[in-house]
Amino acid sequence: MTSQPLTTVRLKNAWRSSHPWIFQRLVEKPAQRPKPGSIVDVVGVDGEWIGRGFYNGHSRIAVRILERNPDIAVDAAWFADKIAAAVRLRREVLRLDEVSDAWRVVHSEGDGLSGLVVDRYGDLLVVEYFSAGMFRHREWIHAALREQFPGCRFHGFADEHVQKQESFDFRGTEPAAPAIISEHGVKFRADPAGAHKTGFFADQRDNRQWFAQQIAGRRVLDLCCNTGGFAVYAAVRGASEVVGVDIDQDVLDIAHGNAKLNDVRVRWVQADIFPWLRDAAVAGERFDAVVLDPAKMTRDREQVIPALKKYLDMNKLALGVVKPGGLFATFSCTGLVSEEQFLDMLRRAAFYAGRTVQVLKVSGAGADHPFLADVQESRYLKAAFCRVLD
Image (cartoon, rainbow, N blue to C red; front, side, top):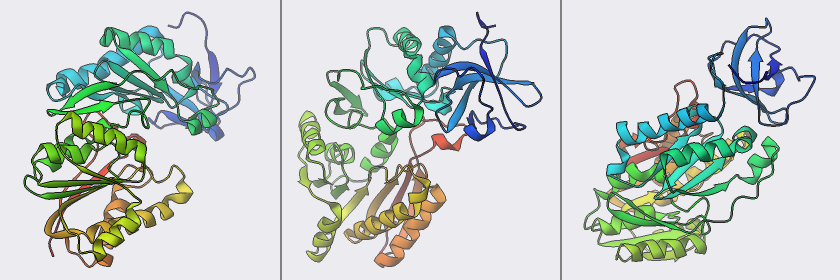
């Protein structure tokens, strides 16, 4: 049991869900308000013990259940066990060290650690806090990670909207020095100071590899290329020509460096993809393979329809520059957009573009981004690999 009694938080209604989130409207405010992120015991309306987890009276998610066994304390040892289990999955089951030294170490609810995401880039661990509870107990988290990755370096941060929602203040750590990582033999620079997180997203590892195996000798266009993941893979795997387009010059500078790391040539273009694609279509530009991997469109449920409209517009334009018989890979990392909605958008984009699209493969993030069957919120990336038949 815990070494000292925890504050008890009582629910207003019956609770039968196995989901770790309990929202504010279902929770009675305790007489003595614990600080945001404090560990509490949670009991039902009948006084029955439900679980143990983080309480935050300022957040829409008032409780994040971490432990459902009343005899197990949520303490430093608990965090060490959970993080060790997450690392064993990646190393012993998925055997990710055989293909890369960059992978997701902890994927929030998918690893039983609601509100925490940890990514590994060689010896650099990037720790992102999505909850006040994880931020409050960061010393336990760092100690547990050091056990698994001796000599590791840390870069910690939390997005401003998260800090506002969860009521904590964190300006982030001093940016760590970049790490050079390898993935399926392709090298990338992960730089916390240079772009969002590091500019390199391990979730697309398997998708980059699958795509790159299809494009030897072909002309490739990487739209919203960010730091050049798909483009650099394509060039390394023998594409005849690669063009990468992004609106952000800073990420293109990193992309240029990534191409240089691998001793390949890519033509980088700083542009908004909407006018660029319209001009390319008018000029008769056509590519054997096109990738479209835009940034997250919205975090607001009220903005899902506008987000789908934007996806529709950009997919329609992108389809317009794919050669008949060419490959089209399209992605959405907006968690609020379901796979069903995404594929329906693709159907409509193909209709408006006047193209026949044959879907070859639907996938998502790599297996180091697991999600629980009853916590679909941890699933966010949708991927569709297609042939454009006519």
